[in-house]
Amino acid sequence: MDQDTVSDSANLAELLLHVARAGQGEEAGAAQLTAAQWTALRFFARANRASRTPSAFASFQVTTRGTASQTLKTLEARGLLARRRSDSDGRSVRFEVTEAGRTMLGSDPLRHLSRAIGELAEVERDALGRLLPDLVARLAEMRGGEGIGTCDSCSHYEARGQGGYCACVAMSLAPFEIGQLCTRHSPRAAVSG
Image (tube, rainbow, N blue to C red):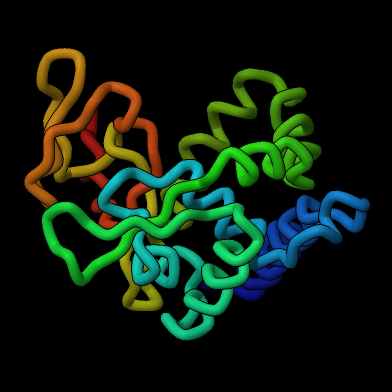
């Protein structure tokens, strides 16, 4: 990479970081939870069944399981998340967002960033929609971590009728699950045309 590319890349990285911090806000609603707790609450509200685990959240948050567990314990103690034993494996747990958690998400400081993105021209939103998942996948690969994404762009996904099937976890998917977050995402190879 030449020096101008490095400089441009560093500037873009700094802007992305600024957008992330600004999106978490300093308003009254933001003060109710830490940034990590907001991230956890959002994650469990959007994650698919296979990804609603402490280890999947730790992977998503790019943190240790111990740190992730502390965040989840706090949210559980506040009644925002509920712990459920897995039906298939009694040792593992999954978390669900409670009604109180869904109410809390109504004051999510990220709503301002969502609104700002919504006000972009459609072509700009589409460009972000193509670029950001690729950026996330590249960063995960560089760090040796797992990708984050949704089924419709994953190599493990197979459309079946109205729903689908995930070969990674050998699970049928309902139509609403296809757009949920997964921490085992493997981006499909781009089709050249």
